[in-house]
Amino acid sequence: MLMTPYERVFARLKGLPVDRIPNLSILMTFAAKYIGKSYDQYVRDYRILVEGNMRCCMDFQIDMLSVISDPMRETHAFGAEVVFPVDGVPYAQAPFINSFKDIENLSLKDPLNEVRLFDRVQAIDLFKKECANEYPILGWVEGAFAEACDLHGITQTMKDLYEAPELLIDLLEICTSQAIVFAESQIDAGADFIGIGDAAASLISPKMYQKFVLPYEQRIIQAIHAKGAWAKLHICGDITSLLPLLTETQADMIDVDYPVNFNNAIRIFGKHISACGNFEPSKILFLGNSDDVQAAVKNCVAVAGDNTMIAPGCEVPRDTPVENLKSISKTLWEIAEQQIH
Image (cartoon, helix red, strand yellow):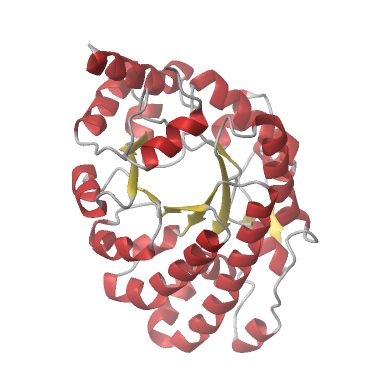
């Protein structure tokens, strides 16, 4: 029996039988281009983001709607100067936090009263109206460590792990509180999952992760669960050394980027955490052909557990050939058919 994406994802998450393994490809710049919009339009108008996501999910049989767009929403709300390049990804003009005094001047922002935060909440609300219980809806927040890097600058943040850890801890506290408030607003609007983007965490040691990242991710995830939603953790890059610690986050799903041995991640996560991944987005999906994509998907499925999801290791590149993206779900259907027979 054919399942809806909503049914498929939640059944797979619980390790139950599905008609095919879910395709959770991450859509951002590709979705904007696909509907003929520039990326600066996509990140500033929830209606465009919703249209792009819905069109791509339907046309490419992707199983989760998402509001992910850029890491600057909380940064903008805190008051940093954010640049919106034409058809480009927003970025902070300069570090916004440079001292303890700057941190003292930060205050929690109400997501319903901040333009870019509210824009994301509105996207979820529109997804809910258009596709309630047909597709799972993924909200998004910046992890505290990633947000600290956004506000303080990644180079200075790395230095301060050693030179000014007290400053970082103060900054991580308010970033955590803001992530929780933002996540709760998105859940209230209808998000089934909240994604937590903490990319910079892949750049530090397990010891540093345990002190400066893990406790804050745990608090955000606990708050998500307390509101009745599911948590999806996304840390770009090679997180091999962090895999054992990631099981302590209590995330329901963790994205695994292509440098990580997928079989190893699946084994460590076990039945309690769904691994999502993990073929190479650039070399395979963007620069390869449909046969390359098919082979990569089959390699991922070959080591999959009952709760594993399939996706490129990170975002679908903007100029990915349409046939390559179609090949992901096509291959997953072919595998499902072979298993039946």
